[in-house]
Image (cartoon, rainbow over all chains, first blue to last red; front, side, top):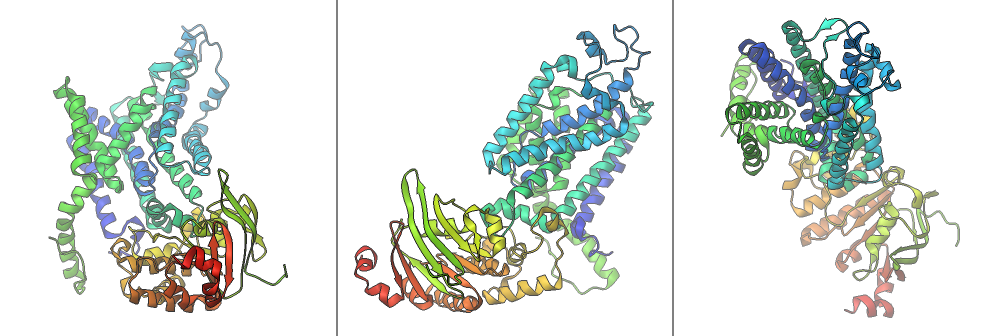
Length: 380
Length: 247
């Protein structure tokens, strides 16, 4: 075991966290759930991208964005536009008055493809757009606000307003965006039918791999001086500025990274669920995503994933079993977490689970390598 | 004014907040390796002067020249990079980081976003952190989380964070506030040491401490310089006694 080399993953603890999460997502869940349920988990895990982005930008950087749905939605819409164009070939749309354009455009008396849809015929462009468009928007928004020192609650309010504006815009421009229904009836990607069980399995694992990639990138960023700067900024922004750092640049960067993660999640959502709609863009989903992160423990990247899973499992369990009161139960869960476990699941684990975990592999490792006992945590 | 090579030249500096002139036509010249103490009653504009020099507040008029650079138009972090370090009135440290990390973050390299990502804790960095920690009496507390340090130790840590940047001009706002007598003595000795190769501007109320460290004293009153000179001459100045020392 070379712990030194794995420092960028957060050391031994980080590696252990990866192994546990991988066991759950890559082994346990696929072996025990049928494809319908697994596909549902895949959908939840696409929200987890947003939650880990929020861990970086809110938990560590102290920047509470209540508009992450914007970036999730943009990533999702970029992917949906490509899939929709592929599903709208002239043969399958020959009954339309203008064949070859998406059905909702035809219903809205649009007779040729709007200019900004055209490049989405290219898969390469689409992938690029998924990654670049939301990140660029975050960069511009971040630059506009952080350079002018708009922060704290004002920043949150502005992000929320943007979420509201974007969802209103999408709903209002029905002919261009599919309106309130969103972009539906997506079938194939480069000829590969994404609705089959095998495709869903593959997409689940692609999604999981991307998620691990994002967590690893997040872990790496936190292990560098940038990670310490984020915490430092949250504690004493002024001090960071008077240590010669351009605070706004750091904020813009972390906000853009969070947007990038959200966008990847959005694109994977579209692929797995088969549609994208404004109900994943607006204020309510954006705030829900913050709840995922809070329940998981906003200072833990792994916690964000567990939090997302727990809240969403809770949501579908409550809504199936108690259809009348499930929203109240969800609210109670959130209040309970905020009141009793402000550090979320990760905080609970640190307090009750970590001492256990610290003991087991430590003893084995010592025996095998013959190391002198070092000052590791000895449990309570 | 004679064109002597001052480290810091403040001329005709004015700032007004909604018509109230917190600093009014202020002139200040800081020499190399000088320890200048600024005193004055509450509301005299002492902290505002530091805010103006360090870029936290924008001047309404006048100039601030540091080694030929005009600071009034520069952003805070660029002023810091030019070599001006600032300590705040209440200890301003990163409570959730250790002493070591507090100093590390203050190391003047890797200050851009990608520079910070690529930043490596080299031997040079490590040695400098340990040396500075030793200098500010925190050599044994490197792994301590900063929020658990005593008030005086937090003050020292912030001074240490400035020293990491090796600034040519240090601005210290009440560095011994809330310190015990023995801590004050140690701080005076520390400032004597660090002032050997840099200039220091200190705001302080504690007259014993001021006597201990000051090369020159400037008395501010209502945003203007009331008196300027050695501690003895300032203390003997009837105007100063009237507005400040006498009370």
